[in-house]
Length: 297
Image (cartoon, rainbow, N blue to C red; front, side):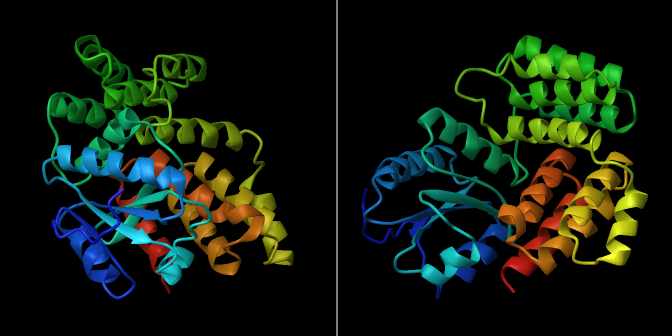
């Protein structure tokens, strides 16, 4: 790994003094991937160059910033970096995606492609995917499923189409079929963020079955506003009832009260809910901005 500062604007080193400009402001123009690493970290020496190669292949659709955690401990603390390598994606000034630990070159390529798409540029079956998404949002889940399936027939490794097909079957209340399609994820792409998103949706649906009624959790909070478990259960129940804004508000309040409770359960559940809503959701985007403002406060 080249430990010297990188002059290329596409990939650069950053510090606490330049982080706002290099990441927050820059991500308003193009997605920025932030790689938290250290010279003593063995896995970082493998992941860093592979991630740089994937970013270069994207042809300017995404940028990469490297942060040495030893030299920039305040930023690492703000981002809750507990182990490295740790990678975060910023879009429009907000952290929206990421992972920790080693990744294969194929996984990194897929990750960078997904990040690139967040910048608004796509290719291939975008129009058909958009049409299927619109069908799904309009309640035409069966037609959407057929469209996603047709795209997969032409491009079997199209993860957006596969995820869309899973979402369509979830909308049709066909949980077992949705899970079955997840078994068709190509080897090496099981942890792709696109697939992780539909898994998050499945997790939320299954958790809702055990969450109980919102009224009972509200009653528990009236008697004890610091009952964190009741507030977490309330968010699950609200999401199950279609009140995603209420679920987001409950989780943000839980994060405000105790961000570290139960291994940062509020943030984990928020990201799961945001993922399930999809990257185009205004509610998810607004929620991410609010969460980000709390993290960097």
